[in-house]
Image (cartoon, rainbow, N blue to C red; front, side, top):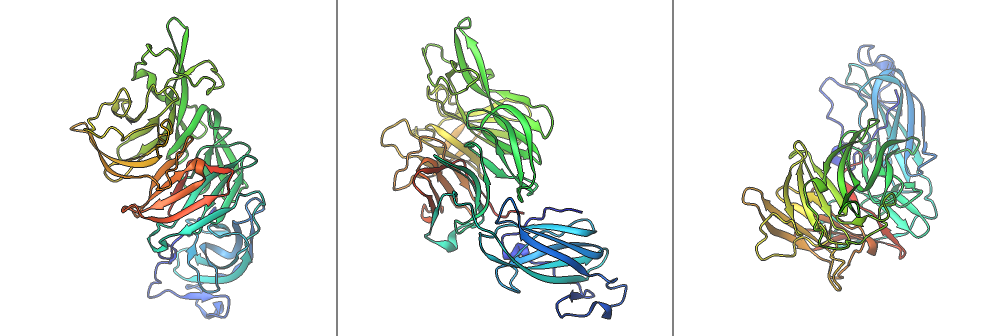
Length: 480
């Protein structure tokens, strides 16, 4: 059985369940001899042929392979010092003679101490075997990152998925809480967004380019396997709504004035891995363009329709599984639709529109909740929006959290943050609410990430060398 195991980032997650009263732990490194146990307790279980080395594709990922003399399940505990195993891969579900696991979350050129654990089928006995290896070096063209810990104890920690783009190179990367590269993949072109897959076996990302793509790509953590799900015309953002099932923004062009005008807009496309993509929602079926505007501009954005006016340019897509609803942002050069939109997935109905000429929510006197929005994410009781505000000279991009009263059709500001440095993102940018209540804000074109707490205090910040910037960033608590 070949397994792609995934490590737990925190010590609490890494601990094994406490042994039962009648269990025995057997060590092949000086512990209780195996032949001292009855055949019922441990029927000659031994761990043999341990191999641990960096992946040939991703030097920071350690591939561990081992065999057992009888069918067993197993996992690998690992850490940076002998006997101090703060991380662990999950225990395999099926007993086997051959085993494989990946050690994730370790920086380059770092010694790794590991302990292989085997558990015979139908038993609680554990057999241990220890080993040591080292991660490899990083590619020289990876941009340098600089981390500042303002309040390390208050940071959420975890791992941040970051597409990094410079003039000469593009990389898909994962950084640890110290800003170190712990995973990387060389890209052929700049891509806007990437995610750790729901099954925690791979990284998924939109292939080809920002404005048009033909596929969602999936690369295994060891870099050995790459698959593609064909989704013609997707652009800018996508989400995984179930394991290997995706929803993406897609382009749509409609003609008006007897074919004289072509307006560019968006759809939501769904696709199961390996199946035919299906359009499930269309923006132009729910909003009527104002044709008194003579030219919405933005021509040339969609290569297949270079003369189409960019009436409404979808930027960010979010799926809330509990609500079974999509949230998306629209912000084009012509300001035909500057809004955050909530759509029922089951009915395709627009539940509300916040911002722009089609606004359906009462915002009171607060007219600045939405301004060239680029990302949206639901929190426990509100929505978190990243506004670029790039069309106004001197305006600062910001993250705004808004409480939505759907019954009363009202929107109220709950929290917001703009950096004292007043970054203005003319491209991309997003905000990500973390599990401890902090917010990770991506000032993409400024090449900076800031983690701030609910009191708007900086706790963690990271910057990249001048000449590089970020795509959408997302943080996960664990890589497993």
